[in-house]
Length: 69
Image (cartoon, rainbow, N blue to C red):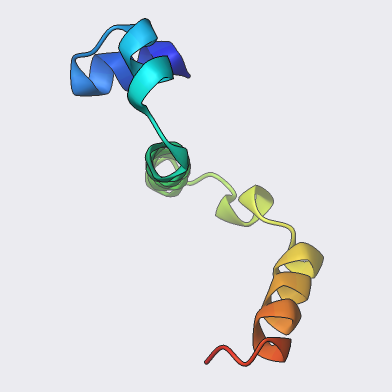
């Protein structure tokens, strides 16, 4: 992960370790997941295998119970 982040932002792994925060890691995760989704969709792969419908439903219910819209 540090290698990929370092390549993406032109930083050494030690700089990533020292300076990165949870937002950087979240952006990295979203970018990697989106690239995987896009590649599967382009190559006619099963994009539904990337997510667990039950888990998604649980997250949605948890979100709604906290008053999110």
